[in-house]
Image 1 (tube, helix red, strand yellow):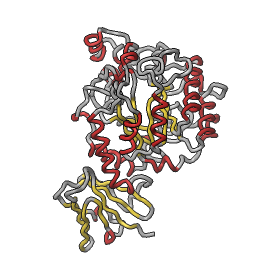
Image 2 (cartoon, one colour):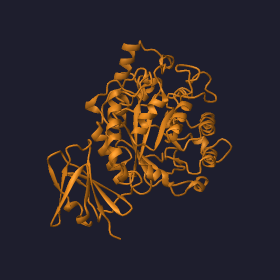
Image 3 (cartoon, rainbow, N blue to C red):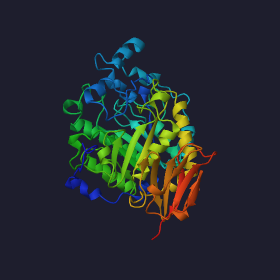
Image 4 (tube, helix red, strand yellow):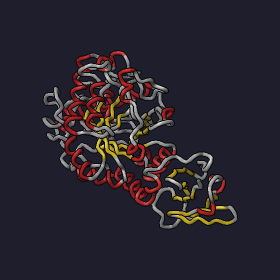
Length: 448
């Protein structure tokens, strides 16, 4: 797969889509991801840790992704399988579709939270690996949220709310897996062989879904996952080439990720710790949940989730290296943002309200001008002729910055949420008592 693969090569049929990644995406820096589905009813997974830090066999048996519940409960002997037997009597996964009511869901209220973070784009799942679509997708019969469960077009509601608030709208679609349509084998190891559908029947089915999403909702971000069925990769009437043609005809400034196989991409992706080697040259995006799951997981708490300051540091680190951060929230079955995740987003939003001018639209600072640090924690961005140092310094403590800013004009230092004293080439930073939670900022002019 192109995802998490170094130096993928575009086949000839896809080379026509290659271009400079649109500037709006490079400026955006922050997006909010939403995973919501029938899996939000059981809302259960073991919060073992981040993707990319476990071998695959252990990972799938103890999968911390609640949105993978349909798969994990089918692994005999797994804790999820045991949980399904004890709590739900071994019921079939599809019973959760009708138990998913979304009775408290207000797309506008969710989008108000998204907007308050400063996020420039928003990407909800429209079909995850369980195959349940959040709109009346062609060929799904009644196995969608218009006919069952919520009995609403949730994609349309998200789209309308995002558009009304000036947030760019994207769609996530799992083309690589559909455990219902393909009656796929249980995944308890590498996603290959009969674990990933590759046939024309599924390729045509998925093609019609993505084209329907493009035509109905006009997304600006096309976010695929896992792979694209092999039978749909060669040019043709119902091919991935056809999908990209329709997408860019509708949205010339639209962007697509790299999870369609080795075909086409506008930006590379990493997920938690997996695919980190792809973070670097060109446009890239790291995604993760507030906890270790994307779907809502009732076993997550403060001990295994990002607090607000941790989320800020993660965001600033990514931006300082030239990437975007796609931070996920997992709505409850009733349609609400869990309180723990809400607090994290609110803290991130409060910080961005103060420091966003040095984040959004920024670019990485050349290493010769400013160096990052871990003790103290220091990261840099650049906006036009100004370098910005973000420093995590506790209230009452001082930090000497000159060793991190040897290539800058120290005399011109100005601070936000802190004071910066300049004395004989020494810059001493002191955190203000009333600073918002998170790193403080000191800015330096850059001479041409």
